[in-house]
Length: 364
Ligand code: ADP
Image 1 (cartoon, protein in one colour):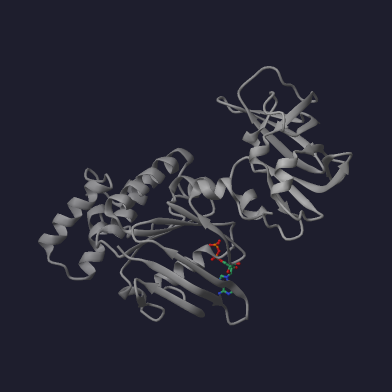
Image 2: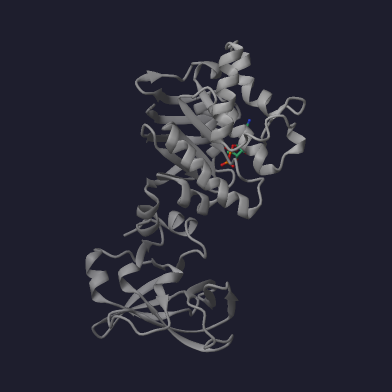
């Protein structure tokens, strides 16, 4: 199992554009690390530098203790799976799987055994004689997976491998890839822009924005304790509710007042005293599932608002509200009690409120 370390990695193009600025992270042996972030944030560039397909401008890339910055791609022992499967159309499934071994002149008998072993692992044993055009998208992606693992590489790299598949198959393949990666015990780095994919697949997630690492940690840690507004808003669907405003003292209470004549609610002293000193402009963040129309703890702030729209999802409902010029949402169990334009008192579970400095975006 290989330990992959990025130390102060920089990627700059000749034009002087810096795509990755000082990225440091470590991928533990055998772990699946997901690099997630919006389109254009530099995820694929990072992956391509690790693969040796893109030159590294600054910093060090280590596989265990070995510096591999200048090692050619073919010597790095990488198995890579892309969004477009890149299969050879004139070769059968068996021949496509065998390709990396044929290239290395592995004896025929060994290739035959290995193709059978891998085709069973990825569930292609009955399709070995087919050509890629006779396969579904999911089956083609399995061939690409099988081809990437047939040499048992040191490191697995996945670049949005499921983006071309339909929603149901994508969910199924996520689980299969994780199972396979764990079974083989090969260190993996998986790039996606899809936060749900990152949350469900990663042992840890590294969130990138504009070429910089925003936060790295286990999915639960990052979801529950986001380091900044970007991470808080990027993970979770519907997104976290953000109320931007300031705190005013009214008698002995601390009242939060949202900008643009938005929400007003009293914040419990317990969450304020934990954060000192409080910035002037703050953002109160709370996830839709931590808002509720029902009575809960006395300490919880209550936000009086109107329902704008209701989304029915079968197993739950999302109520949408507007305040302070931004959309907010609340996730609740299915109920016939709510209608658009209805007034609601929403309790915000104070234990799950996150406060951010509105100027820096950092959690306070
Ligand atoms: P992601 O995978 O997160 O969508 P990429 O790593 O593909 O992002 O790209 C990151 C940024 O690098 C993009 O803004 C892209 O336009 C820029 N980029 C890619 N190649 C070049 C290049 N040859 N010269 C300058 N900028 C580039």
